[in-house]
Image (cartoon, rainbow, N blue to C red; front, side, top):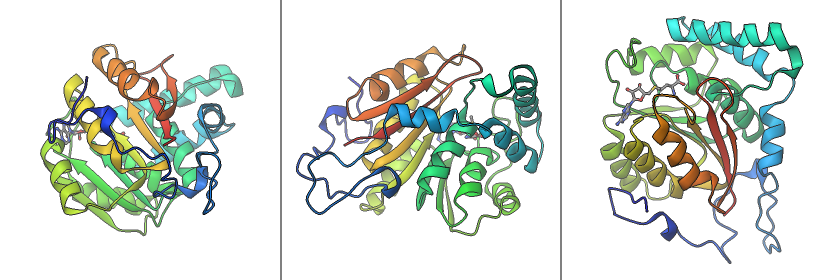
Length: 270
Ligand SMILES: C[S@@+](CC[C@H](N)C(=O)[O-])C[C@H]1O[C@@H](n2cnc3c(N)ncnc32)[C@H](O)[C@@H]1O
């Protein structure tokens, strides 16, 4: 069983919401009344899939990545989008962290977004492009030359956010997420998020710990995005996603693992 390193708390012991549907929730996916018959989440896996594979989304992802400062990886991914669209047109079913965040942030228009693993700000800018007033919280260790790509740090990311017209607040929390997340949450006991991305430490246990640490702070109806679920060099990430999220009744999850490195996207039901 996975546990958080901070508290050695089993995942199953997250607070039980039965009778507590008034808990903080993401309005875009919830139907909330003072007295509720159903759990308030309206949109589950099939709706999320519709959002993820909506017409024009990959084209928009390509246009967005072209607005950012180029790097080898970004240029490659943009060319990948263009090639898939040229070959298969609207019948191409493809998803990655960028299309998932475009789809999720467009629907949720998050008030607060937390991201572990910012690097050059590509995923952060994706959310900001759809929710310019969103308060952004980016956690990164800024590992130099991460996966062979320059990792210039927070000031660079701020200039990227300007490119997509972000107006809200931005807070970077620098350091190892396994230390910074528990400390940050302890200092902000009531802070919850509509949208969270886990894309930092790619070790199996490290990614599992990050998911466990952020899960209690995801609003009901909020969306969790997890990158690289079918990365050939990182098979443990698929296991983490399956065991902690996709198979859990607490979540309704889409897993895209057919091409590229894959992505998982799940809404928190309770
Ligand atoms: C794959 S990159 C993030 C890519 C970004 N989400 C995007 O879509 O462009 C992973 C990032 O996680 C950071 N990272 C790795 N281990 C970490 C840790 N233990 N704590 C915080 N950040 C970490 C690295 O510095 C790197 O910037």
